[in-house]
Length: 265
Image: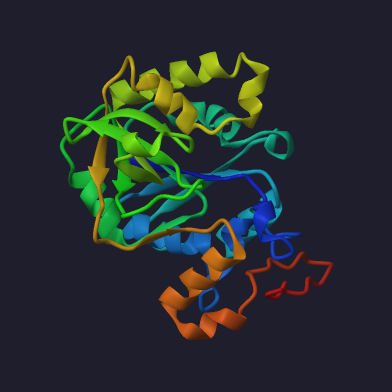
């Protein structure tokens, strides 16, 4: 099984930290950036290949991968030329050539302990499997899910009525071959509509839930985090150690130009 990591976006809600540095290169554990933590978790769970979908700051991501290899996992990159005018549905569409076998799909700003991925990998086989967490209350920014019969996804989106919410997506999915085929077809169909440039790929999963078997696997009790805001970043750094609060971001230095690290605002 391989992994596809969606890291093409800038992360504008984290400005000025992401003014010149992609979100995935923000340091969270000493000098280790988000992407390195993700790759280490994948490798620890036996994933031997990952494709990083790049866009904003692609050359910095590729420089990092070249100079800081992660043991046990081979890395390739694929460029989304539409990153500046699109959301992650378009990035998924650009990744279609990577989706011809079992694979994992994860957001470039989702971090998790290896046990989260192990639980997803060991879950019963399903064409499409969405990792979810549950909590007492959900806010408007949560990607909420509705489930029936404990495991069958019926809807996913930010605007689900509270009475229908059974959890939230954590930004990590597993696809078997049959599910990958359905997802590829749905992505191709969606991208024929101009409005899809501003849609999330989970809107495709929401539509597929009516015609394909999409299941969920709960990772309740395990640690994960999504980094969207400075507050999210501070919490993740605190998880790895209080000294992280003063750290900036990983910076790949071009051979002929020095780059100053970006610090916390």
